[in-house]
Image (cartoon, rainbow, N blue to C red):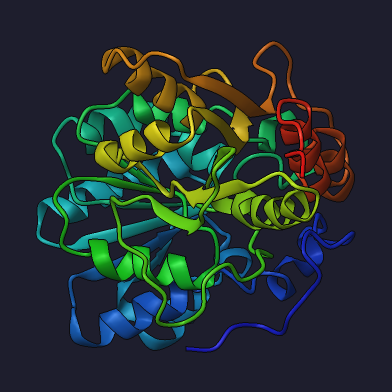
Length: 335
């Protein structure tokens, strides 16, 4: 499998839809599904006029009879996928997260989750990665919506390798899966052969002072922040909590036992996302003495409109932002 040439993380021009196909180095779903589809004729892809933006067009080139461009009709696309699933296919549905995860919430709930259909939702450009295109194109509530549905599984890969692993490991899972993907310009977190398992929290760096729990596009800056903090005498671990449903409760409990101070970094609002899932676990498990710090978007206002390059800095969803948030709660160790 090959990916597009390296680009700068969250490039200044990455907001421009005219160049988006050149920036999607971590959108490997089309390649991976093409490979799987060579041997498994159950695999079909439905796309809403965004095949070049999400690179599913690569599946169309190899399996045109199983690729359906449904046009700008996302509600119909999800319901059609449910129909295909009911006849034995495994449909992968691709569109912007704001359209797929939010606009199609009713169809996902009623046509996919309720009958437990094996439809896979490739929900890309989540969070504010389409910054200039405004609130209608931002998706900072989608995890909360998906978390509220029975039978739903949610996974948020951090890079091309973890997306490939997530797809390959879940082909035959029962029920719907929500793949929450960012803007496609994610730098590598994992290298080929690294351990990655659906449904399991992956510790990327051990720490004794605190742990940053991150997923998706926040994993890489969290790792960089951890390195800088370590240089300054603050030992912070990082764990990739890529699978949000089902939550890896045993591993989460072990992390909380080791470092009762945890930071949750996510490209989502802080009321209904991953931090809330962890808070629910803490309350339901009656775990005392935990301090949870949320790094994300406020739930009391919508995100500003502008280039992602600047918006992520404004909201502190960068290496410097994560580092600053940790420093405000943890003091360096004295020699």
